[in-house]
Image (spheres, helix red, strand yellow):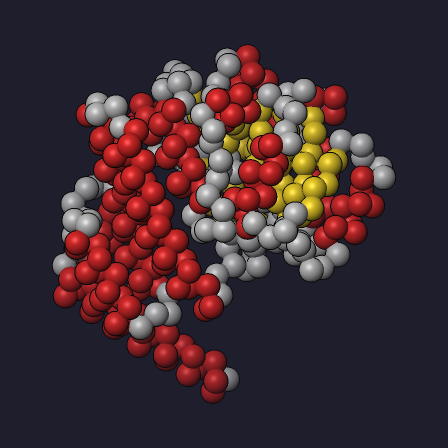
Length: 335
């Protein structure tokens, strides 16, 4: 079997049928395909819809488990995968028509550990809002690839060889946000054969209630602590596993700088108090992560990094954003 498509499910009754059908009705022979749905205690009709589809499609496997979050659901999928490769697909997203066969065939024929493919962001009405599509001329090792290619941090625009994941015991951290970034740091570190292709396969629906996109006020504090945890995990992994080549150190430095800048951005964006913000800044200083010295390839993120490296400017932005939030809330009340 060539491919196992792993779909974590939680409260996605509105999207799950379209998601599954986008895999089944693609151009890959069904004999080369299995679909593993991992339900994470959905409170809605997601499971009922999947069970009804199983009656018509033998390639669907449903696994229910006690809540382990997105990373835990993906891990369960990997453990039950029979394919040579796995593809992770969020239940509110879908695959582009007639695009699957070429991608999986290319990965298989070239014995890739990881293949990265293109993706588009779409509205619920299928209007395109962004597009990522790149290719590399040659097959590279994982950290050579990261050093030369700025693609996506998501786990949902990649194929991973199952034997590769199992050989290195690669699994996702459970019950945390941005688990993709942490997972991919380790995966690309160990990968020997990586390539990007321009083919657009993933269609990422921009919804407000996705597992990965729904951030309520109650979850803001966890988001911040999870980013801090991923920073710590990345530093620990670097210290334990680094082969000390200049290229490896360069990639680790940029990824840690990216995470730190993301944390600083979220300190401004999310609804937290100034005291907590100052504590996090001081903690970054103690770890010698702030100011962020490493240049980022993402131009917008790098400009933000440059501005907020000045602590006075950081708290001016923090204050300004708070004022704007208050004014917008006030407008909503008036209306």
